[in-house]
Length: 122
Picture 1: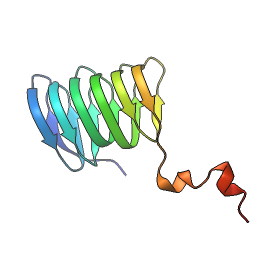
Picture 2: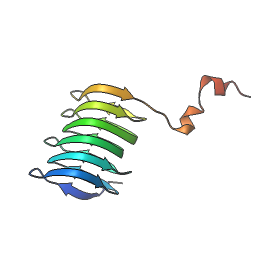
Picture 3: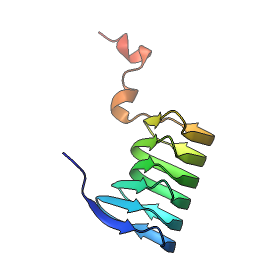
Picture 4: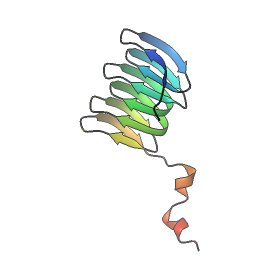
């Protein structure tokens, strides 16, 4: 099942401000500001995003600088550069992808119950 893009900010696009959306948005240009969504943000290889992201997932082929909180996962592809703070339960960095900064891996409440202490219960 493929994800349908609902918005596309092209290579010549420069946008500053706040963006919220449902579904998937692909950025190929430059975006500065705040993005809030439970959906997927796809940052193309020539794109540059600066700011604060609160998304379901981030697929990064371009450059991101700032703070990202992802509910599901962050994927940094071989051309991706992420500088800043990442908070996500899952992080995948493909060979060549760069992360410079802090990474915080938070598990959901379901996984938190699977602690060694909790497994001793009978």
